[in-house]
Image (cartoon, rainbow, N blue to C red):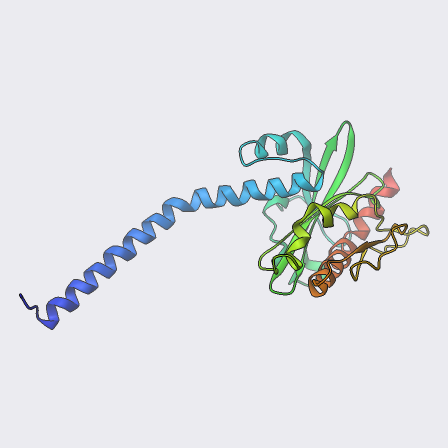
Length: 236
């Protein structure tokens, strides 16, 4: 059996490490545009789901262009920031800023001549971040649709926020009460929400912390748009 010196083994190993690292780096660079495109398409699908438009990876861009008529960002005073691309705003980063420095994205869709206002939401579940989109009707109080996602919630428990059964509860709920006071929609302990209430939905049984996370996420994120909602209502 042929033997090799320690120097040879060291050099050979170093060369192999460099070659493998170069190959992996090259693959990462090559795949990066495809990964970004997939993320973009997934985001468009989620936005479309909030207005009850089902899509696939193949037709998401076409449907997005058809239904999403406008997008922009506003500040906490409801004023537009024309220098910000709403689609590229990272809500996690924005929510880490003081509220008066945040860029708040808004997507406006139109279905059969009627507008919907789509608001991104971001919060914290049991095991990691949760996020989604809430679409409001033209009155800027009634929920038209909702879509929620998560990174690592427990299957069968907190992960249920992704299901139609949970999300459909939000349809036609109100975020303003009869005195036009912002109240959001409360996510209560599973089975305790009043079915006749315009402001309550049932949380997930066994997923209390994630349900609480959705509740807080809606209150924190939707309340940031109160000035914008007020401005639009004034001009309606």
